[in-house]
Amino acid sequence: MSHFGLLVVYYIYNGQIMSQQDRLQKLSERYLDLFSLAMSIVQNSDDARDALQEAIATTLARPFTRDPYAFCRHALRNNCVDILRHRRRLAPIRDIMKLTSETYPDEAAKEAWQLKDELPEQLRVMMELHDVEGYTYSDLAALTGRSISSIKRDIAYAHDKMRRMINNKNEK
Image 1 (tube, rainbow, N blue to C red):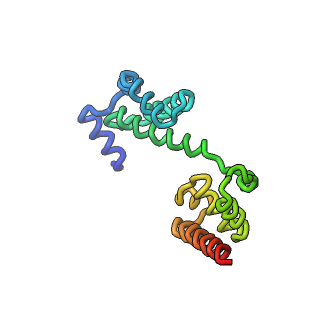
Image 2 (spheres, rainbow, N blue to C red):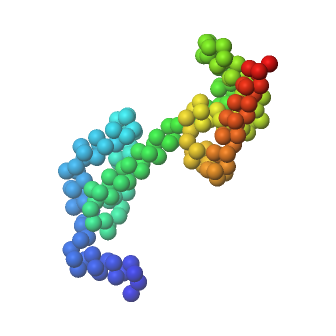
Image 3 (spheres, rainbow, N blue to C red):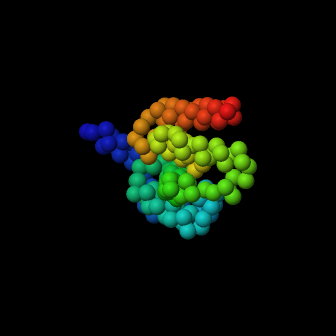
């Protein structure tokens, strides 16, 4: 008998397999808890409903879960995180570059913003996405297919190069 077959026999013997109706009943009793969890993460009722509906469907499709509520909470959290990731879209670099002097009323900040154009494109893009758009190192690694350490190195190098350019400009 396969490992899966032994697992099924164990669950049946111990009475731990719930019917789909039982699982649905257990989840419906805690629907408001699940919905409030989704709302606290995604902050949007439509997205919360979508995430919850998908989590419930996933839970109902898994007959061998001991605690459907715990499994559903976990699936719901993952769905909400996926929704948040999909909301975040790449801002075109050209839009970032169109920032004007009104954005930076301080003359030094304006000069620093203009100096960044002297950076190599790869460094400039990584620095802008991390510093301006708020992408994490892991987000950037996933977008570019590179390692997190290489992303950190590029951003640190860009910051260092910007510092040196600003210092050189101030010394003149």
